[in-house]
Length: 100
Image (tube, rainbow, N blue to C red; front, side, top):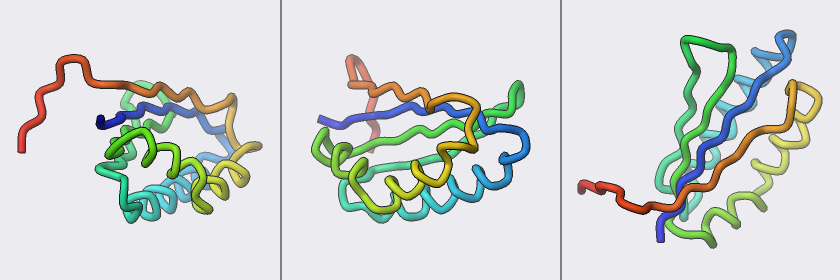
């Protein structure tokens, strides 16, 4: 079953550019993972946060993502750059409309 993830994070103002660069690198690397369907980075017009909307082939692919060198490196690098821990919500389809 496809797994979808919504993550939001707030950078400290002085690290905003660093966080964005680190996220852009994470996006590029994650999109090459065999179990990744999509990995998209967003910003809001109402706050200074970053938002990721991710989709994985299944639970195993999502778990594998969290063990990759690029993911672990991102987490280690940005720990002190964030105002608070990243909020992550794992979502499972209840009544999703998937068009091909």
